[in-house]
Structure formats: C-alpha cells, structure tokens
Image (tube, rainbow, N blue to C red; front, top):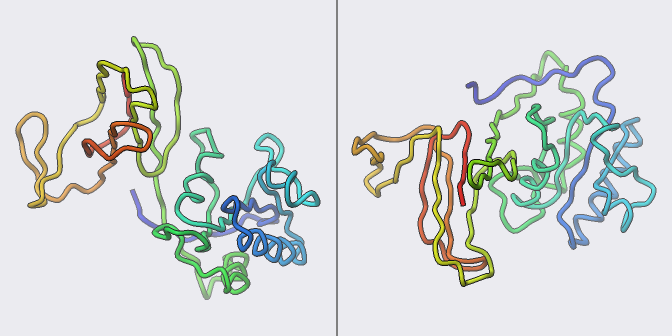
Length: 235
C-alpha cells in the first residue's frame, strides 16, 4: 500500500469540518473557539462532539454521523485525541483527512503547532493548487473482533494497538488468548523475528501490537507483534 497521496478537493469542498479536542483542557477549548470562528469566516460548517457542544459550545452543531458527512477533521490534543477521533468512525469506510495540532502530553501523531493553525488550515483548504500539491500520509486501521465460544461479542476498528486486560477482578483463574488468521511472532533484541513455527525473519515491515497486561493499571506482562488482517481474541 502507498504511504502517501496527493489530496484534491471535490467541487464544493471542503464545506464541513469535525473538530475534536482533548477533554478538560482549557487551552484546547480556547483554541477550538478560535479555529471555529476562523473556519466560519470562510464559509465552512464546524461540528463538534455532542458532549462538547452541550457543555461548552452550544452554538456549534453536535456531530451526527448519519447527517453530517465530514470533509476533514481537526484534533486539538495528543495522540490519545487522534485515537479517539478514529473511534468515532465505526464503519470500515475510509476516514476523512485529519490534521492534528499538538496540545497534549504525547505527540507522535500530532506534528502541527496549534499557534500556526491559520497557516496550516489555509494550506489544507487550498489543496487544489496545482503549483503546490498537498501530500497526506496514508494509515490503515485494523478490524478487531472479540469472540467467546465462537460467538462474536464485539467488533472494533483500531488504529495502533489492542490492549487485552484481565480487568479489576483478580479472581480470574484462567484466560486463553488466541489469534486467528494471522502469523504470531515475538520480536528479539537483535531485530530478528521468531515465528511460532520456529522460522526467523529480519526487519518485519507491518507489525501490529497486542499488549496483554495483568490488570487495569498493572505492568505489561507480554507483548506480541502480529501481522494482522483480522484479529480474533478469544476469552
């Protein structure tokens, strides 16, 4: 799969933007207010999450996936805010483009400075300029299924990783975790990969991480890295 592509707006776009901010962050709330006003001045409709609209921004529309097609998204926070945004789009359809402004504690996925939002957003809005193409990084989501006794209990689309926890109850005697339709492996410090069939491979390209921990707030017990198309976790 290609790692990046040139973005080009269809006629009439962009016309609607979803802004998601880090909760409980006054600076993010203030920046959301500034960006919303900036976008409105350019004729772009802004929607926010329903709890945010009710609690802080009653003049902005609450996002409803059924009636609000989104042209692109803005996040104000850290990596957790980006992951939360991805969870708002539950179907397998591609997500809208996302521009992430760093206003959180972790920023591996948030490369843009929030103080320069006007310059960055001007660049996004004018993406159709043939003299200055706008490149976007392409990422894939994984579909993860939770099964028990062969029955699917839940299905989630995830961006980075799945965390399997025992939970707050310490009385659990045994749990079995199985991954199907995938090739499981462990990563060695010498950058080789040892698969469950005993073979080795150097430098895996597309690893997806599953983390198994002891409890809700405990340390990691084991990390396994898997090439994933569909993940089934059986409890």
